[in-house]
Amino acid sequence: MNGYCGKGVLYFYNLILIGASGVFIYLSVLFVWIWGDYCTVVANIYAVVPSSLILFAGIFVLVTGLIGFIGTYNESRCSLGVLFTLLFMMLSIEIVSGTLTYIGKPKIDDGIKNSLWLAFNEYYSKDSYLKSSFDKMQKELKCCGVNGPNDWLNISYVIPDSCCIHSGKICYLLPDNLYNKGCFGEVLNSFNINLKNIAGILIGFAVFQIFGMIMTTYVIFILKKLGLSRLIFSPTA
Picture 1 (tube, rainbow, N blue to C red):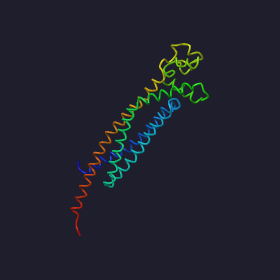
Picture 2: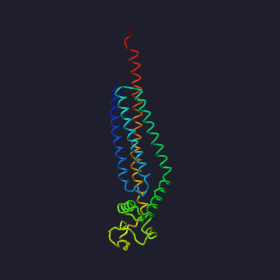
Picture 3: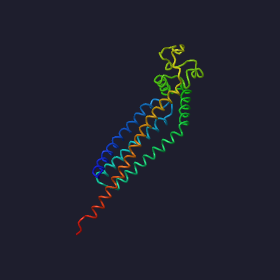
């Protein structure tokens, strides 16, 4: 592969990086959209923090792509060195974040469950938004209570209509008309699916970053070689 070909590949790589930044920003918005209605129920941290990290990653990738594109255009080894450093930083952050998430997963699960119980116990309070959010969660995820329909019997004789497959004034009196699954399992399953999707994207992106680091190193080497050649063979006064 000659220098021009290497530059061409790096041009295309940086354009993909700039496009990928848009994907990351879209994912952050999507994550909030999916979990936004459940924020009151499962605590804001499980929606705001991941989406904020993804948004930050999108902005970081955009800046990296722009620096790489400008550095390639100007044949600047300094800018390409910055590109390599930023790619390495992103890769390191992804590895550390993935490791910490994996290690801390049991605590995250406990945090989600505790938040659900807190929202459950406040269901009949004056917070109408929390009540509507809990109802929407039960209806959309087809679940009832935290562990099951019997949870409601501990705080009230009336099970909410949102627990019913077919809504009605006394729909809860028909056991076959109730969602039998608890919401903790369904929320956790939804959270894990989103987490796995994000992890899959990040693993693929990590491979892409390693390729970019290799190509950046190659182009820097070619530019250095060309610089020495121009210095040796340049006409002297």
